[in-house]
Image 1 (spheres, helix red, strand yellow):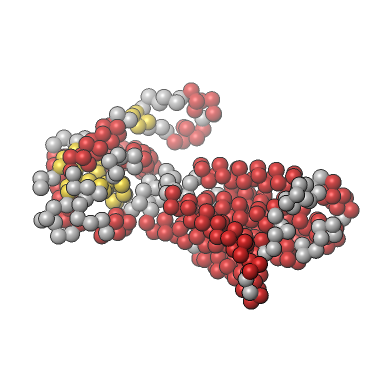
Image 2 (tube, rainbow, N blue to C red):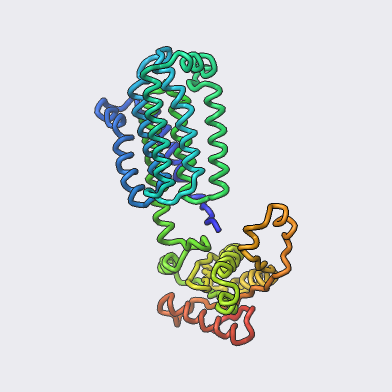
Length: 409
């Protein structure tokens, strides 16, 4: 189950892009020394970004840095002259087509580390493209030059530098990248989408002074933000369920104040279920229960506490309010049939067979027991509230399971 992206997480990349626009506006009024810093800033940020990306074992971020830094070098090597020059026109056309394509390809190929075969193939593809691009620009073959002049003529309308066909291709790549982000809404896919957006801006408006320096710097900053957030999520978020973990729960509790309610949730008979159906099916159960619990109302926030246990935290001392919403989600879980499918058999089925067997005959009922406790004057720290919620959970199990029990104040 993928974790949901909060509004604040999306806001930061937008702030970076707005800051880039502001920097571009104020650039002409900067001193010569500050302007010189901007020229080298993408390389400096790229060096930091690629070091951290390698340390975080994130091939996708490494490739973004390589593509953007090489493109920035090409712009400064060949595009500081009129686009009517053959080498400048060829360079601009190829960069306009290949940069967004490579960044999208990089996003579409799933992450599996910086030293794997898949990663090495991706590095090779980028390197070969870069070498071919450089050789083409240096030799500017007549056939490709005529194609660039006819089909990809720059400045199709006033203020726009990129050709209409290249712009259409870039728009398509951006749309696909955005869909990939929506399908997998995590910090990594978010960073990859906004890095692509930042890399396209200099190609569309190349004649703006310092636009390549400013926006490729923004792209490197977005890589750094994505890498740090991804590292944070690995430390604080449970990979299986997508929920925040116990570490974040205790950080929340340390600053929550004096009025809060804690609920401990346990999947009934989970051990015997695991022994009967196997750990893979058990993981599916955990993911299903987590997805339901994550929708609890009343302002509750759910965490993976460990094993088959979850914790719900409410910023209120109204225990009946929390209990009402927890009982509703308990009932929803109990009313949701869980299908047991034979994984080996399912993998061998055709698409038609799988469609015909959408309603498997082998289903089981999953239930949860919940204990709730609220912070009172007798509790010295959050762990004591959790202990009271645990005691209430034990009573729920003793009383027949599939129920919510509140601790006495």
